[in-house]
Image (cartoon, rainbow, N blue to C red; front, side, top):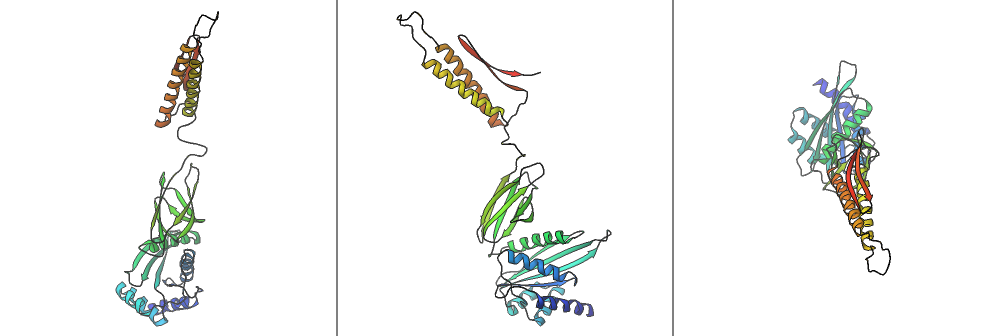
Length: 319
């Protein structure tokens, strides 16, 4: 009983001295390790502000805060819900508990458990751990915790459902690290900038608009740097060359002269035009095939030759 009293007292002090903005709709209560309470409180409140929530300092009277902690000691969330709905000055209360353990390397392992209480709704709980925790990794852990917590049926936010090819890419949203793909994260309604990156791939940047209460899907494919496509240059060259030959063949055929006996010489290019056009069609078809199948070749290419009276098409390869 004495240890619990010592734990509650710093909590009440933290709750009363928080610098949250008044006139809002969310209150935060943090309990657990006394040395970590101020830092965790600042992280939770900072995340809420950044995602469009207004904060109210001390959402519960001090005696109700102590009773709320007793509810969690008894592991009775029903008790906590009744207390919050009856005593809270806000429609929503976030209750967070932080636990710290020293590991063999002299670092600290931090576990955060948070509950989202909203009037008229069942409470939602999320838990995240941070091994060998630093200030940076603690912030990332808090962001992941709060994103999951706020996204669990909350009506004040929207959901971004993000996937990438390949999966496992790092995601940055509005300049903050937000996890890896596939990722489902709660965001405030409005425009957001999403950057997806992976080793050996060019970063992809997208703008997305989140709608309150709705899920917004976003699928991104990451390509190797400098690669315009998966096809390489050969298919495009083959299609271009084939098209040019086809056009040349049509022109040769159309401008061929007919022997009317009026001239000593006449130009008969019909056969040549047909040969060149067929060659162009063949080369373009090969290019189209490679384009749609995605095949590449670095040591072979279409070979075209125009000879007097005709033309031929083939495939050349270097050895």
